[in-house]
Amino acid sequence: MTQTEQAPEVQDTPLVPIDKIVALSKRRGFVYPNSEIYGGVAGIYDFGPLGVEFRNNIRRYWWWSMVQNHDNVVGIEGATITHPRVWEASGHVENFVDRLVDCKKCKRRFRIDHLAPENVAQNKCPNCGGELTEPRTFNLLMETYLGVVEGDRMKTYLRGEACQNIYLDYDNVLKSSRMQIPFGICQIGKAYRNEVTPGNFLFRQREFEQWDLQFFVHPSEMQKWFDYWKEYRFEWYKSIINHKDRLHFREHGPDELAHYAKQAYDIEYRTVLGWQEWEGIHWRQDWDLSRHSQYSGQDLSYTDPETKERYIPWIVETSGGVDRTFLNLLLDAYEEEPDPNGKEPRTVLRLHPMLAPVKVAVFPLQKNKEELTSTAKGIHKRLQRLMVSQYDEIGAIGRRYRRQDEIGTPYCITVDFQTLEDQTVTVRERDKMTQERIAIDALPAYLLERVGWQ
Ligand code: GAP
Image (cartoon, rainbow, N blue to C red):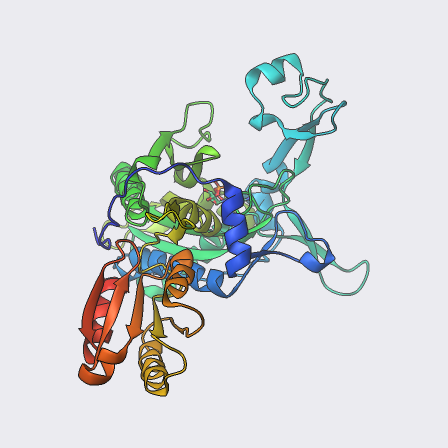
């Protein structure tokens, strides 16, 4: 298994309230509410300058692990709008529904599957004890229309799950990429759901991003590959979090399993929201390709080039959320560390260095000394070609460290008077706050070794 080095385990710290992450995200430019000047839209967010760097790093690491490091996996990027029949074949038009009840007294709305069994049995609101309405059913697919002429427009849907493109492109990939079973197709892409109860910041949104692997196998090898990907994905998440004890598997009970699934597991992470799904590992058998064969009329069966056996491949799916990863990693990394001298606590994001949005910050010790600022700017320019670097000369050095700690920058470089004599700088590490003196020429290799992934 090719995984990058594990992040070191840290001492347990209290679970972080979501509000702290919402505030930090807005203050420092990770995440903004979408259309905020118009009052916002529930469950839709935009990503700011730091958010987009962080997100790109998260995506890149997934792609690197899943596609680049597996000879038997390739990637695609499908459109978010497809033929409407796709969603009939997938079962979403019929079954992608939430059942909701409203409280007649306090007017709050609940998904039935989120209510405790006693509230359902007694028809009682968990908030105020009021009576609940009869359940109503809502389809989560977002409708859209293709074409401009009224009466001649085709109704279709923004994709409700990203993975459908993989089934649609399976035959094209097979024919164009010399892949043979067993092999997998990966994709990262947006999905849209008219969630009736969006909330908890990025946790449940209406527009969000998923990463999927669909791995196509001979039925006799299904269990082997299911076990392989289940473990691989667990280790992957473990490699990027600090609190390893907050990660576990939850096996789906018989009442949750799809009729074709022998097994399913959620990788769950514990936050203030409790244990919640981060990624699902699903046994999809031949359901998807059989349904698309049936609805499209195109035979999606596979002929083994050696044995000539013809069969519909079975599928192992690993399906997770980019946004949920974004949120969980911030919750995992955020810490307010008490100051030993009784000053303001230090807010630090202990992000894995390879995922941190900014890798290095370069400071001149003083801003009014031209030799210091020009040397610092020169180092920043040189490093910027290799990684995300920030130059900062504003305020006391201590405050500049704090600004970088809060966004998770793993290394800060200070150019001081000794630099002008011996061409060395101090490199200060975020977590232990240790400082080392390093030659300017050695900085690229020193940093790349610590912030890249091999
Ligand atoms: N193709 C399988 C599928 O879509 P899912 O459990 O509905 O399965 C997979 O979604 C992952 O997508 C979840 O584990 C979660 O990380 C993420 N996800 C699902 N709904 C989401 C939402 N409304 N907002 C943010 N992330 C969501």
